[in-house]
Image 1: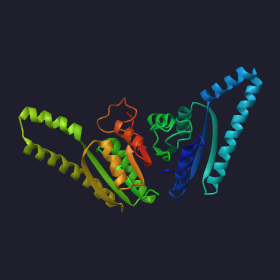
Image 2: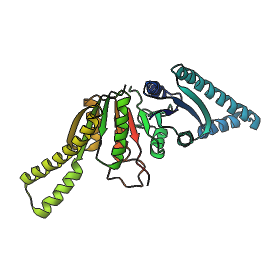
Image 3: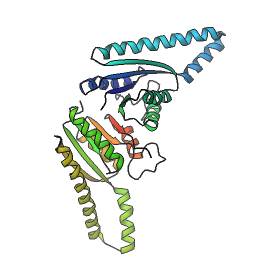
Image 4: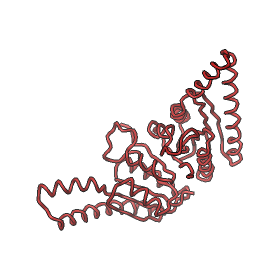
Length: 154
Length: 154
């Protein structure tokens, strides 16, 4: 029933907690994992326009920075991929620029996954928030079952 | 990892969808299910005070009505219990008066369950709401992993 799993990660601590649940799914019939990192387009644009203003860089350098961000994302995904492959999972990595919750819902449908397993909070969420906005949007907008793993206390 | 499961139900269609996921958990190592129905105290009080006003009934009749509501709840839980027991689960039924999300979070802790599996919406939720308020509160307030099963479309 949970053969194909979508694991969206922003490489935060809570996402790492969710990874432990993904691993368990191997023993429970899990076969394929779609590893997804969404590079937040709005955040990245803010960052780039700041850099642009300060250093007066052009579109070519901008492309280079984007490439670097993506390379870094793919490199981090690849580490997780290897870890999951050693457990017997088939793994597909996806790294995209965009709005995280939109891309997560989109990929879940495109890949027709059986379940989404994700952390309750991303790395940018402050302690006081009870549920991260990306996770909240995904639960509200996806038709797929969503397993939410809570952020560790403290 | 998901040996002990809390299944809160208000006997709605979406809760029935969640039940299918509970059943699957049997093959995936699930051993014990806590079946929980919370009789909404505030709703019930509204109902009773209306009846009280119309028929001018006293506290004795009120107790009788409460007993009847609880009997009905336990009867419905018992049907699900039998179904789950036939699959090999150990099942414990709990029926309480209270505020649904508070009781769900409380029972999850008291019973120290490994996961809560529930529907995205209860029976009182209108179509337009993206996530039912009980489910939203449970996700936000419980430390346990929560698996949210979406309401069927249409």
